[in-house]
Length: 199
Ligand SMILES: CC(C)(COP(=O)(O)OP(=O)(O)OC[C@H]1O[C@@H](n2cnc3c(N)ncnc32)[C@H](O)[C@@H]1OP(=O)(O)O)[C@@H](O)C(=O)NCCC(=O)NCCS
Image (cartoon, rainbow, N blue to C red; front, top):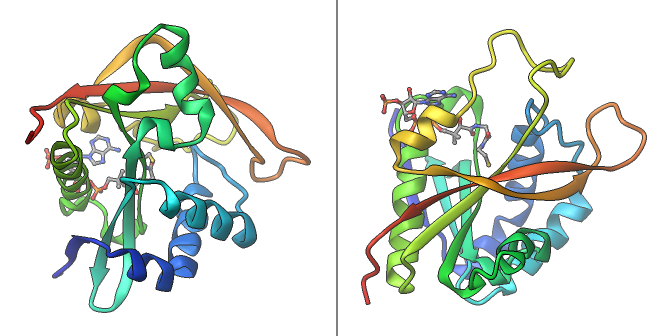
């Protein structure tokens, strides 16, 4: 399997917006996200995202097909829900580079593409002068009825990349779960790593 992982130019993101939307909807439909996505919302979200100064999108390609993607931007440029707990703790939001998501089609997993997504986003953070990378992850109760029996949390994968859970730092974000009538708030916890900025 020969997969190319690279940062997308802005025009490419615009051209690929429907592919990116479809990818997010497909991957986030699974546990633990269980996101019942809609293309119109996704298009809008991605378009707004690309207007944020310093935002980057990394793509994974099998030939011409986009099979995975990862995003990152300065924390202050993302949805305000994600910056709020930092400001509440008097942490300077401008110190953090935030990783929005990594999504990879299931058949391409386990071949190191997820590691490449982290490398490329950390590179973007260093280039932009950041010393702290952070991301958030949804927290589901361990006895959640839709948790697959063979579900493997990503905690060890993240720890191996050098990330540590920030104790007590939590936000909440709302979306509609698969099978639910309306959107509901989910708790999201944060993981962080110190890096050496390039400038
Ligand atoms: C997160 C994701 C992109 C990882 O991609 P991936 O390409 O399969 O990961 P890699 O192949 O780079 O894995 C690297 C290492 O992590 C390990 N790993 C991968 N998934 C793991 C898991 N669920 N639990 C424990 N270890 C895991 C691999 O075994 C590998 O270990 P090694 O370095 O010892 O060989 C992919 O699992 C995914 O799209 N998941 C669904 C969406 C999601 O939850 N995204 C994260 C939040 S936005």
